Length: 113
Image (cartoon, helix red, strand yellow):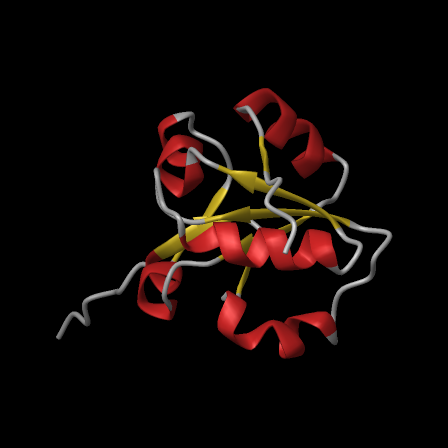
């Protein structure tokens, strides 16, 4: 397994976002459903076979989780080993939100009678 995982800064992440990189959120589905980076998909290293069905090796990939979250390391390394241009965003979702960048939030609406 390739032990080199690119850990990139927010400015680089933003450039990748603008270029249309695929963002993969490795947090659990409950965390993901509460909010995630706009356009991100939710996958983990455990279901990489399903992920490979929808990815193309010519697309850049950014893997993220929570701040200081190590869940993305394995997935990023596996993607690199398979020939993908994959990067791990260490600051994760919290850094993205703190910088007021685009997110998708699921807000539960209360019914009014």
